[in-house]
Image (tube, rainbow over all chains, first blue to last red; front, side):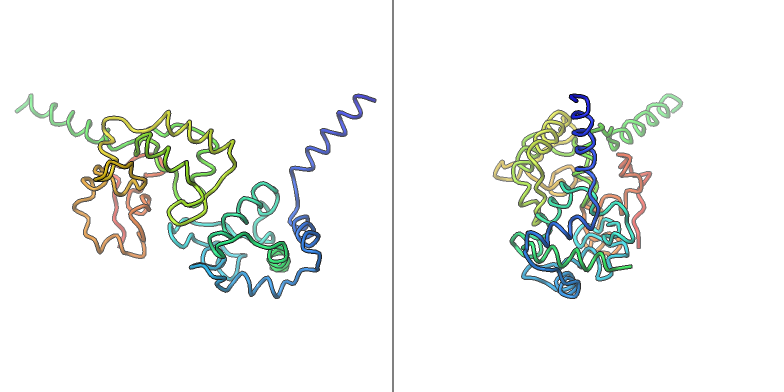
Length: 126
Length: 152
């Protein structure tokens, strides 16, 4: 019994650290309490939200493509999961980058609804 | 003359040596500090500059570069352990405050004196912080003139 518990706990820990992009859409929708809109996400992503940059300043307005950092010019791999399997597979990374990049583009943290919309749009890109 | 040549060669070798940096390995440093720009050699700034920089990552040259505390402490310790020595020169401003920009240090200034202001503005270079634009082997810690190629 004790062994089974350890195996179950290990399995849970292993799966908990590997999310899929859809998991984040589900999580943000749940936090927001409403369904996401890919169309709203596209508008949010590609237009300035109060800061000097929009998301697309670095990620381009077609995030299936590679981007470039607006200031340092460093290459950025595609953000859309369809073009880059590594994106949105690690909750710690996702939370870190939403925190930083929302602060840079909106001068505040993003609302769950905004993150859900962006996820819905990114997931719709092929 | 015959004696002078080896001496001259040695001098050239020594100067070249002075422009290359050994790149100490640190997984968290490499991952966190090279997501937006290249991971600059820790030897390019003294410990007080790194301490000041790592103490305010939420305001990192106009960007939020905050990371979790555990990693922040680990990377800070790594930077302090590998920070600059004598050849790094003066990395403080006129008021004696530690500089945060490598590009404002005396050594950087001296080494780049012959680069005209307009060159830095080129789209292919974009910023003096973009070492790799001209120093073709910057990623390997090699900054000697031999490996400089200024793009058009």
